[in-house]
Image (cartoon, rainbow, N blue to C red):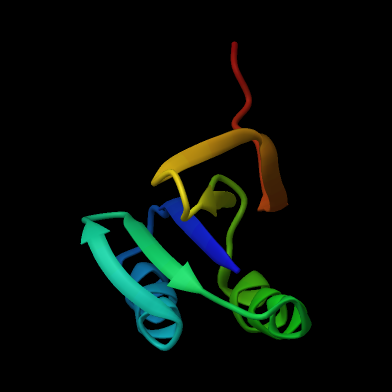
Length: 88
């Protein structure tokens, strides 16, 4: 399945590790955006590799991409690793 991975990571060190992992699965299309192809069985493996690096105010999201129309399915968002910011 094709996904769009987006992240907002504070630490340069952590960000480099996430980029290295995402490069295994797909291509960088913007500074913090990757298009990736991953089989459903490997999604959990990728999650387990990325999750330990994330810190309190970091976020990582995957969005399912509709390859046939080259659009993004907002209602099929997979929000599997997300640590929300506190808003005052």
